[in-house]
Image (tube, rainbow, N blue to C red; front, side, top):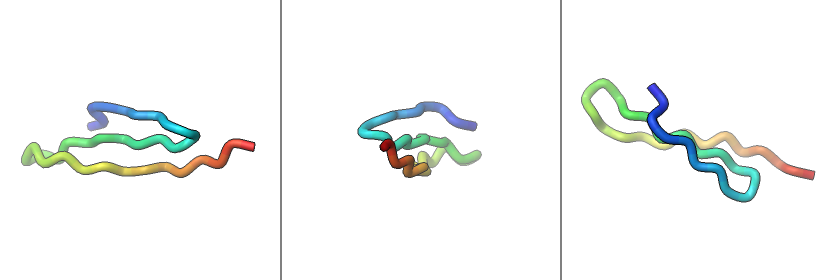
Amino acid sequence: QCTQQVECSGEIINIILKTDGTPIAIGNKVHVT
């Protein structure tokens, strides 16, 4: 379950809450040319 998405300088960070409520961050590095 993705709760928040933050985009900055071509890098997208997804803030995901696990089932126990612990937030984890998963980053998808995207190079913009």
